[in-house]
Image (cartoon, rainbow, N blue to C red; front, side, top):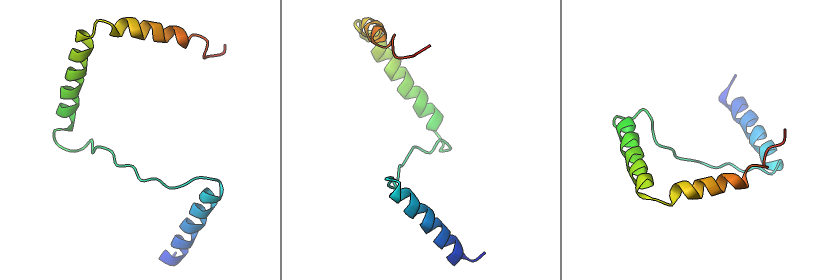
Length: 75
């Protein structure tokens, strides 16, 4: 299969998606394979945990927020 046929098929697919009201978006995300990624995650997690512990009103806020979602699900 030549690249021209592949390109045409891809273009038709993209055109169909656009006709369906969608648009392409490019999203850049952190490279999880990069050296130091896991350690940076741990560092940031520790900072967040420390900030949470220092915030006396956070747990009360979270408890109050949970009351609002009690009826979101149907059983």
